[in-house]
Every structure is written in C-alpha cells, then in structure tokens.
Length: 371
Length: 213
Image 1 (tube, rainbow over the protein chains, first blue to last red):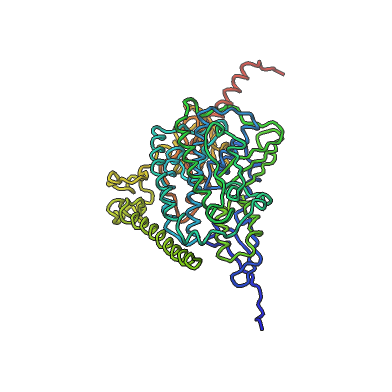
Image 2 (cartoon, rainbow over the protein chains, first blue to last red):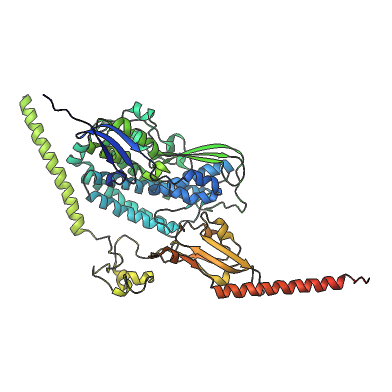
C-alpha cells in the first residue's frame, strides 16, 4: 500500500544567498520535486519610475545607476540615448567611442559577477574570488575615469562627464592583455570542469519558442538559439562601425537552452567585448567629449522608445513627454523582469537544487526586477 | 563489442572527472601560493608585512585620518595591480570652501534629493551673496557629483575622505557656517538694508519738493 504524501509549501527567500538580492520564491514541493514555483517580487521596489516624473531630466541620471547596479554605465547609456533622441542633442564622435568603451567594459565586469556567482551557487567558491579580482581592476579604472566604483553617473546628455584621463588607454590595454589569458584560464578552471558540467547540462531547458513567448532578452535569449542582438540588429551609438560576432547558443555541449549554454554564452560575450574594446581604443578620435548646452533641457511633446543592449538584455526606456523639464511618464523595461516570468513555467518539475541553478543562470539582479 | 564500449565510456568518464578537477585544483593551488596577493586587510593591516598597524588609526583615536595614513609608508612597495592611491577625480565626502561661495543656489537646485541647503544675503565687500546657511546632509548624499559639476566658483568640491560612519545619523548633517557668523551677516545685511532705505528716503525727500498746507 503506497503511503499518502502531501505537498509542502516552502518559502525560498527573501533572504537567501542564491536569490541574488531580495527575491522570494513560493514553492510547492513534494519531497525534492517542485510542483509549483511562483516568484514573489517587489521587495526592492523603490518607485524609480515615479521619481522620474518628479525630477528634471538630468537629475534622473544618478537614479539610473541604481537600476542595475552591476551595469550602471549601460543604464546611463540607455537613458542618455533616450533623452538625446527626444531632445535632438548631437553627440561628438569622441564621446560616442568613450561611451561604447565604458559600456563594454561594464558588460565584462557584469558578466564576471554573473559567472562568479553562478559557480558559487553551484558550490564552487574559489572562482568567485578569481572573477572579483579581475573586477577590482576594472573598478579601479572606472574610479580613475569618473571617481566612483559602482554608481558612476558618468554619461551625460550630449557626451560624457569627463574626458579619458592621461594614460587611461594604456592601462586599459594592460588590463585586456592580462584579462584574455585569464578568460582562457576560467575555462580550464570551471567551464570544462566535469562536475560543473554534469550539474548543469540538460537542466531547466528553455526552448526557442518558449524564450520568445516569455520575452527573454539578451544572453538568455541567445542561449536558446535565437540570433538577436540590438548592438548588431538595431545599431545605436557607434556599434555599426565595429566588427564583432554575436555568440548564439549551440547544442555543442549539452542541450540548447539549458543552464550550461546560458553560462557559456556569457564567457563568449566577454571575449567579444574584449574585441570591441580593442577596436574602440584603436579608433578613438580626438575632439570634444561633451556637447554641453547652457540652456535648460526641455523635451517637445511626444512619445519615444529607445532600447539598448545591456548585459542583462534589452533595456528599454519609454518616455512620454508633454513638454517641459520633467517627463510625463517614464517606463523602464528590464531584462531581469522578463526573465522572472519564465521561472514559473520552467521551474515547476525541477528539483529544489536545480531551481538555484536556473535562477543563477538567468542572471537576475533584484533591483532591476523591481525598480 | 558493445560491452567494451560501455567499459571504455565508464573509465573515460572517471578519467575526465579526475583530470578536469585536478586541473582546477592546480589553478587554485598556483593562485594561492605562487601569485601575488591582491587583497588588503583594510584598514588595520599593513599591505606588505600583513601585520596590524599603529592602533591610533584604527577604531579608537582619530576617526577621520587622512587616506595616506591608512596605507602607511610602505605603500610604495606594493606592486599589485590595484590602485593604492586615490585617483584625482575621486568622489569622497563633499567639501565646502566658504570664502569662494557666492550663494548662487545652483548646487541646491541641481541636487536631485535636496541634500544641500543654502541661504545667502547681500553684504558689502563680497562678490555675489554671502552665505548665511550652508548645510549638507551627508546621510542622504549619493555622491552623484551634479552639484560639483555646476558650481561656478568651485566652492563645493569632493574631498578624498570616504570614512563617514558614525553612531548617530544627526552628526551627518553638517552646518558649514557657524551660528555666530550667520547672525553677524544677517545683522550686517539688515543694517545695510536699513541704511539703503534711509538713503533712498533721503534722496526721495530731496527730489520731491515738500508741499505745504
């Protein structure tokens, strides 16, 4: 006679080391098996969209740092491009190259955190210390550039706040020379590790159709085999002049769209970012870095939508202006938020330990989910 | 034949696991023992010697020591990849230079969260207005640098101080102008105003001829 079993409701989070911030998952479990998994978000809601309606356009720039604090430069860039298109502000070429340079540098360190915490969630603590070591170097470069290590507030409407300091490009190239072999070392260190692979291959597979249906963006979408990158397909800034490949997930190791391919895409993207950085350094033009206007910024009435490719995927700013110095409404679309929506679909049927792998592989950052 | 393949796969699997794990272990070992250390026991230890430094700069004693004192004299010996010096553009706690301030209110207007509060009065012998209140609420400041960027006289600037932890948040609200100075300036301005009014009245009295009844 089989024993009668009941399902149990289990709270994972809000304070859980593997949820990368304050996220809560309500699980209905049968032993180790998850029957239902529902993310409960909103613990880090700060009302950024409402704040945007109450401060002038330029004052919202420091708040975009807090949107996704691991990729503050990319958030700055997305917001700056939105307002520039709305107010028709010209950007000097040097500023454009500096912007791409800092955005790609920030993409590298964001992916480093992603890869490091992914390995840590899977039980390998040492890779995290290795990735943080590289990140510190870039943080030092950013500190030299704009004075801050995390919340940069560096990009302005019509350019960037500071020119590159003297010798910055030399120090950057020294970092890249150091970083490329390190990237290869990560592969030997963790990517090719048999236990790591066995743990992730075939876990939480997201098919291309599912990825599109749930609006996965960025690396998560590409890991499912959809070839879509805004930097190449809708080039903004100077991405059109730069040569780079868009890594797309293949079923070379494991299955298409599993946790391992989402991990592997990020390693490949870092390689491409290094390539973009080298081109930026080569092509860096001389000239002014900030087309600064003395007038108070006003935006004509209208609706504008600009999307850029941030490390966590498409970052969209939807601006409704009714004239004046403040936006009527600013809606922010983030990659982490849409990644959360698929957790319920893919999470049910997994083991509890595999859910940790799924969340880590989606690379969600809690403040970006809640805004 | 099929059995042989199974056996081969079995042992290949074991070989692969052992090989990749020992590869990872070797990298950990190499990094731990043969590579340069990049971490620093802040703020209590010396970078090179790894021993506790002078106790006066740790918890008790001076709460806001200069950054150079924290790193110690041996910072020149540090050859790691990280910066031991604060860069030129470092955004530390906000500083204020009273003599050059003209109370133009630009810093206060450009602050997204009303960290700075300025009031000023017009007095003799000073360009612009003389500030009577200049208050910075460090507990709110998010170091965005918008105020420093717009200041026309560089009266607001970033210091290189970054240690502002206290036990009471009220100590983070800092008045840069003492109440005595503020009062003195207010009185001066009041007197000047009265004086100007008198002058104006006199002039008006002179200009308009008195009408007798």
